[in-house]
Image (tube, rainbow, N blue to C red; front, side, top):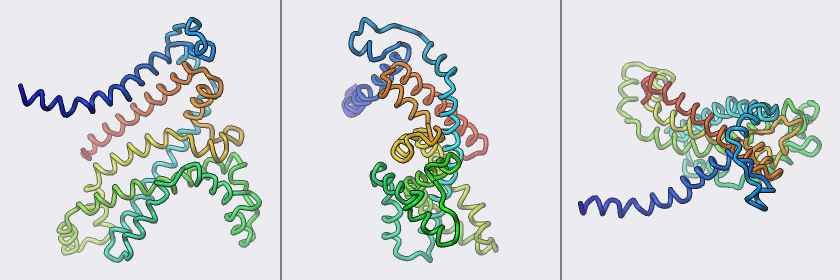
Amino acid sequence: MKLHLAAWGFVGPALIAIAVFFVLPVLAALALSLTDFDLYALADLNNLRFVALDNYLALLKKPLFWLALGNTAYFVVLGVPLSIAASLACALLLHSKLAHFKPFFRTALFAPVVTTVVAVAVIWRYLFHVRYGLLNYALGGLGIEPIDWLGDPHWSMPTIILFAVWKNFGYNMIIFLASLQSIPEELYEAARLDGASVPQQFWHITTPMLGPTLLMVGILTMAGYFQMFAEPYVMTQGGPLQSTYSVLYLMYDEGFKWWNLGFASAVAFVLFALMFALTNGLLWFARRKGAL
């Protein structure tokens, strides 16, 4: 009995913090999504009405939501594999015995992760400027006409994806590097003695051993990319022609621009449900393939 009380005494403060700062806000947001809480209700709670699932039904009928969802899916489908590939490639290079100055490169490649999104996004806006940008200046030296990277609907989302990959790949790189260092070197020595080439060692040793790490990184990266907001907010303001307008941007507009807080909460829970379903799909796929 005393041991149980001591255990609850240790975990109690953490559980209280989780309940106060996570569980209660989530439940409050869920309740809010079932109401028409807006600026009028904020001024006088007597104007608050229970609307049940009307916010969710209105959201599913809103063309802007489907446009934002398509843009977000484009960002995730293209950005997540690129981010994971860049992270893994850099981790393999840093793990190689041929690499020198490893501490310096680890720090340099991880630096974008800890920099402020808004600050580096402003810098990237100038790099991709149609007239004065460094990239278009380099293309002009090759005889290529300037490209309106952030003002052309065909190029705006790929540009933001490139920025997001550069900004975030260092975090996953550190995770992959730690996982690579935990793989026994004896496995590679045995494979080399059996005549396995470097690509064969990668596919038959490195990839299976990185299975759980790849799954975790995939889930974390997917969750982060579904929450695309800061990049388009600073670089394109959701344009041009709403080509970079995301689901989280829609939630921001509804909640903090138009003060439709009940509707914005519904947007948040629809996004949560989508992420939850995809995460469980990845876990099911991993169990089926034996990665877990």
